[in-house]
Amino acid sequence: MRLFAAILIATLSLFYFLPFAIAFNRRRANTGAIFALNLFLGWSLIGWVVALVWALKEESVI
Image (cartoon, rainbow, N blue to C red; front, top):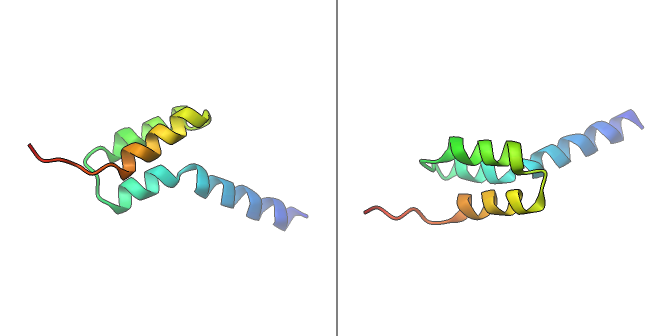
């Protein structure tokens, strides 16, 4: 039972920080801001979706 709980917590944690992982992997300039948004507002579905969209959005160079 403890192993199942540990695997469940690890899986949910990885899913929770998915926007940060995507931003880090894509080498986004705002990776720190995406991490902060995900950490503090990711518990709400809206904050998590905003962080995910921000991580997936293409960067435009002006």
